[in-house]
Image 1 (cartoon, helix red, strand yellow):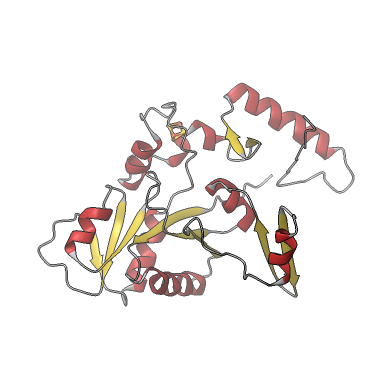
Image 2 (cartoon, helix red, strand yellow):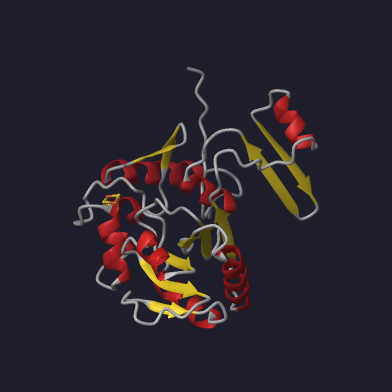
Length: 254
Ligand code: SF4
């Protein structure tokens, strides 16, 4: 059974109007041209009207639907009126090589590209996880310890993403990887001193349990039981003998 490569992520972080979306457009275009499957995920303000007021899907939810979707040839959009975790949102995007996040400033265990207009913005946005800084103005004299690039340096930036993007760590900060937090493992990975699969929750890579939208840590024994039993059961079903990915949802009534 071959193992699908995990999606790797990097966040593009900056203040409003700094040029994050333009940079992401360039980066997505370049990575796609290298043959990667690329997705994006944007963090928005709580009251941003994601759907268009007055449109059918908006009216359906105004009438009480908890979710609505629109499907067209080759495209679809789903609107859900509940919070979605980052892991759930990544899952919804499907199997991709890279997902570029726009925003998510407060998540402290994701490599980040800063997009800035002034040196003071670097200080405000830096949290030690930056892999590059992009600016329209020269940032000479700024001791940041990472590459400073212009918006047109997309080839170099894409190479940095290829090298530094990592799978999403769970954020449990359980210390079972030998590092005291997910941030510490992310930093060690970015320095080339560790592998993100030191995270015991990623080691399975292929077994994840979510209860009411919250991912639940599994110890190695429970994980191997889930994996063995589910694979064996599913393999007995016609056409599922060589399943590569199994998803099961159980809805409770309590
Ligand atoms: S084992 Fe995984 S969840 Fe726990 S601290 Fe390490 S990276 Fe985070």
